Length: 345
Image 1: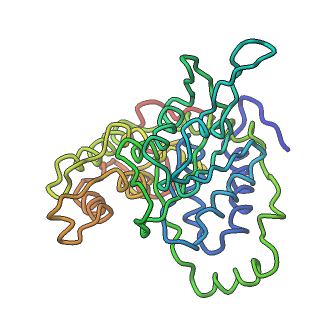
Image 2: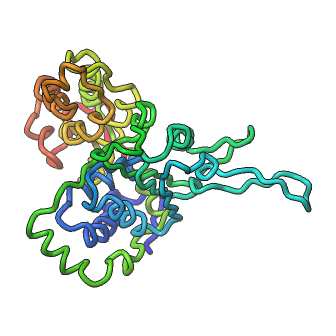
Image 3: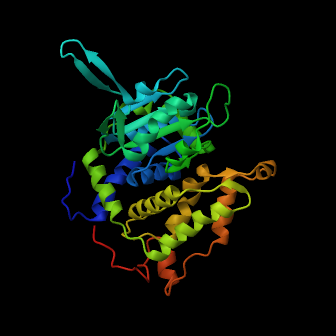
């Protein structure tokens, strides 16, 4: 694999993402936007919630993303009898040493796949809270750092209600984005029959990027410039969810942070060193909708959180610039009002 020095260009680094994207799309046919959002969350140091009906490839998407990167991967099958110690680990008494020895749990991996996360009890679900937010685990008063990069990819079925425990607001708020895979098109489904008819393509999937390359990409995303009007635009979008009459719970300040981070990753995927309002708009539904709680009246009127976010996007003015044509289009021109020159990555 190629190694990069500290002054590696963004173009060179995004070539790594292109390899990962092609690898994942070789398994998940006809869903390029879903694959792109997954990569955006990875580079933005977030966690991904994949929510959809059974059989559309939720777990396969998570596995394909994990196997495309040469890093440690652990899969947790969430069940009602799963214990918090199965996730975080446990201290066991060592007779020879006459001391407690810590046995790490499944969370000690760089990519953790949580399958059907809403089947575990709230007590077990809460074992993920510290690790997802602080990237550490505290057991018996001792704190253990988690490896880097670290990403939780969780799946859940929104249709089944028997034997499930809905994710609490604090848990959903820690996921940067929620994505629905959706049913494939007829052409993609025909192609799936050819590709998946014999053996699973996951068996032949090989890593196409090293963990240290992903760390370089994450570092590059951190350096993407976000002008003050773009930051203010993100704040206004999130603030509008807190006063909307159809919502009884708006998005948190963490949602604002996640939205800006995701916009920076989207800009990097487009080969830009600066974020645009387009990046914020494209990610607003995926980043904000799963954190919102509609009122009872809105639910009676069949108003979804996604529809509310779309309405807020239409009502919130997009930042105006002296050169709107250069600022508004993805990848064309440089923002007319950067408060500082975009930093070379």
